[in-house]
Image 1: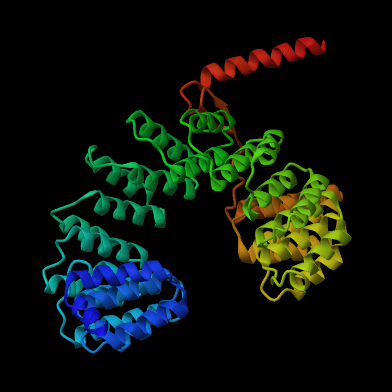
Image 2: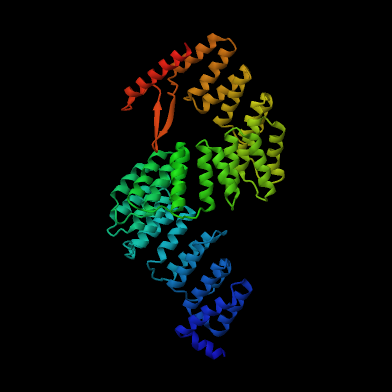
Amino acid sequence: MLQRITALSLSSGGLNWFVSSLKLHGTKLKTLKQSHCLMLVTGLNRDNLIVAKFIEACSNAGHVRYAYSVFTHQPFPNTYLHNTMIRALSLVDEPNANSFAVSVYRKFWALCCKPDTFTFPFVLKIAVRVSDVCFGRQIHGQTVVFGLDSSVHVVTGIIQMYSSCGGLGDARKVFDETRVRDVNVWNALLAGYGKVGEMDEARVLLDMMPCWIRNVVSWTCVISGYAKSRRPSEAIEVFQRMLMENVEPDEVTLLAALSACADLVSLELGERICSYVDHRGMERAVSLNNAVIDMYAKSGNITKALEVFERVNERNVVTWTTIITGLATHGHGTEALAMFNRMVKAGVKPNDVTFIAILSACSHVGWVYLGKRLFSSMISKYGMQPNIEHYGCMIDLLGRAGLLREAEEAIKSMPFEANAAIWGSLLAASNVHHDLELGERALNQLIKLEPNNSGNYMLLANLYSNLGRWDESRMMRKMMKGIGVKKPAGESTIEVGNRVYKFISGDLSHPGAEKIHEILQEIDLQIQSNKG
């Protein structure tokens, strides 16, 4: 029997038999160890191809440490086996996986193996994961030495490495010097620009890209980049252009577009995207439903957001947190707290964002005791350490309730320095509750953190006015003028015909400004005549 198996190992049938055997007997660690023993007894371990398949089976089953142990005992591993091991380590998120992969790569060079086009993309992923641009440059240099820097797979990996490790200029240089560019090369650089918010460069690159090469990933890189850079108008503009070119969006594209609609407060356009999804018969994944709920909530239609929430079958922590945040933002603190209780009863563990939402709801409702209890439960019940945003919610809660001294003590007890948002919250509370002494202390801190924020000075100036201290109020405004702090012009937006228009106080650059002012004057005259 053993002789027959040994003979099989020398033929292609041996590989087929071994792979079939692994599939037949399963991939539990005990079974894999038995297979390994069989390899050692029969001599199959001398066949690098069979060992590579075994390592692949181990890593696919989640036993990459055992796979690495097998690899380290191979006396003469070839290029294919090294590639397989590096790839396996690059795909798992385990402690020491990155250092093991680097060790395999170093051993590869010590054995004087010759790399191929599969070697470098795998090891470049490791450079990205450890964010080591120096290591990445070494790999880049080795691709040049072996003449593999013209391979599109290798070039794509190099561009991704530089883009992810802060070397976007180097990524662009590699792109410009590459003669053969497939869609993956273009998309790698587009994604790099999108990741760091260089959206003007990304837009130019998208326009340079031949139309027959552009795919859904190309468009999504730019749309998502605009959405993350808080430039929603441009995100929607690119999305609409993509549809005009008959490129069908995927789930990631739609998520980015819905996010842009939410930031634009564009309910009509968001609903059109939802209709597009339904018309195409696309199944709404959990993440897509979450984006729809968020879009409705941010666009002012909390009722519709609740309808979508109640209609979905599958909910995760993001689903619950999104609707709780929406309810809290709309001032429905009681409903938000009831939704939080539903979430806990459903067995869904809240995360740090959930607690920001629910503490904000307590603040709006004025439930100080419940807010304190929930804040304490983060540590005692859920084992979560509150961050600065959670402390900010608590200080806002105490400030709104008029517990200003307790709020100030909470700031002093924080394990980190208070930021501008926290001191701003305390200044606003001082204004509401007419505590001039605390307001002045808060402003002194804010001047250090954001000296050019006019809102802080205006709050204290208003507090002086409310207390009848007109001289101090005028002095505060003069001080703003003296140090060059300007109050930003007010602005508003309105959605008409699937477009969102922004209007800024005193700005006459809009092409329809004259006509708009004529209509406003007519409306004003009509209001005055009705009063008479």
